[in-house]
Image (cartoon, rainbow, N blue to C red; front, top):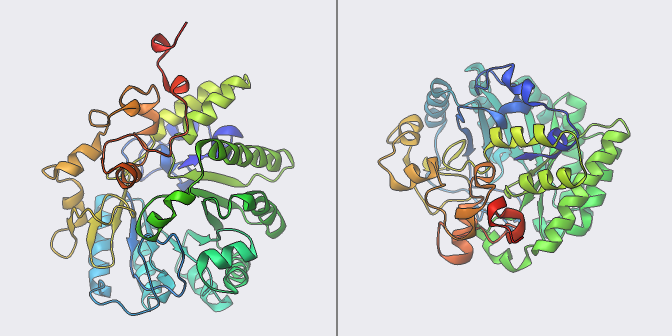
Length: 399
């Protein structure tokens, strides 16, 4: 995650992180991305079932009961292991997690163990009573996916009325006193709606939005041709930066992040240098703390059947299964060649990534996207929109 509001608008400084010692267990949630120990935030796709059919769904979900999903007791064992391991956050995802009857029981167990519990949902099932229950079990955050305004979102999500139901769910969360935010996956179908999403934040008093770059996984693989080109991506990222700054200038400090394209960090830094922004050096420090892509290190995924993946998009790679071995053992077992390499990708990336001056703050970007586009796990991520001149080391640039 690249915290646009944190970095560009100065809502976080390096000293804020250092004050807590940089450890995941001690850091408040808005500073977790800068932790020094990178204990993994774990996405648990607790069910594959979903009441929508989104065109970019990495789990390729349908509205049906899938066999082999983890039981409540399986979930308790997973949560207890994660708590002992020191995972700071459990993110309940799907499918649609609210289709799982024991979700509240599992979330309550997580919070009772001292973990921060959040959910990623399409929001369409959050009625007032549901929101009250989510508040009661101690959920820290509800992320609601909206991939455009009404017409755009409903086409993207495969259901008429999905936008209005999701917006009602957001309002119900706000009324119940739960922190709620939007999740928006950028592509050619909805990029024109980004500005309207900022207006929605303001009109509905929504405190947070995460803009996700498209990852080519699941049904999202078919959208590869509909990803933004590099110039389009730069324009959208600039718009996100500009609108975030404008809100802050109006005294409306919304939390705005971009996700799944870690060259956004260097791009923001280069823009601040060009603007002679006095905070550029502090932003560089924070980007070094962040370390960019953290698949297989600071973020992990457990599937509905217990399979462990380096992240939620990497479903074709299994690192083990929590029904057979605890997550903590699987995650620290470097006898798995992929896991060992993901702990430090720098010696393995090739091409322009290998010589990029921003490799330490980008982390080699998204390996699963490189693999989907090229067939080579360690090839450059095709979604990196920085130019060869921008990534060249100073002694490599032409005079």
